[in-house]
Image 1 (cartoon, rainbow, N blue to C red):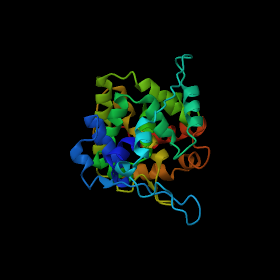
Image 2: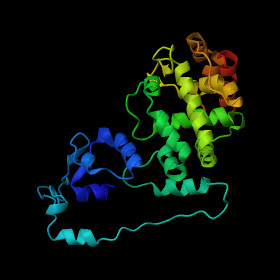
Image 3: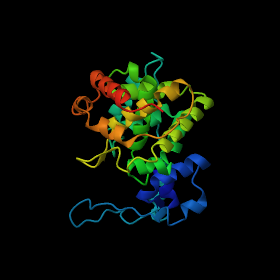
Image 4: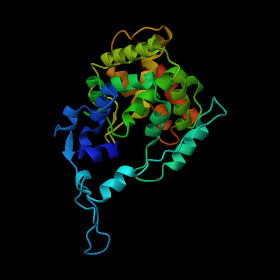
Length: 291
């Protein structure tokens, strides 16, 4: 896409890249009307540092149309791709993830969720993108726009992973989420539609919670451990019965769980150890009412 944008002499504004990703997913391309809209794109020229003190880089300030003699070289330059394929074992992609991760050493490194999205994209992930844009979810996260590095998608993924497979959790969290993402590739449309409806009913159930119900007051950051524990406890019975939630969350119960000594101790260090994850889920089921 960077090469494509360079040839078009337009480059996406940083604050619009998440929105452009959604547009691309919907259209399979970037429509010309969007490409030439200054709300989404800027005119592009190369900005390169000096090769030596007081010696201007010869490509600085150029764009695709002003490359002159170098334009032909650019057009004829092959784009090489290396395909890394795992033939066996077929049921474990951990080595593929590790290869991807080790190759990911140049430029801007991808975060674990960005790698995961590349390896396990599915209709389940399409569902995660949809609910990630829900304004009620954005309010709970205290973030108006989706995260460029997909941290919010990872939070949703963890919530569903704990809800569906929490009792069988084993570290590491990276491997757990990779395996869960792989399994979700086999989800039917009906399953994905149900999980979306369940989550949307969870958002409705959060309507009377304070805006900062899942925000850690000490650092003003979203408390992932608290969210996934509450989500799992509240949705557990509904998920088993294949129904949506009924009723609303009790704010005092969420606050009580957040201050519960056992829950707090299991959230301080080694948060992804099996014992600590188990303690947090058990305390949430004991304190927060299932709906």
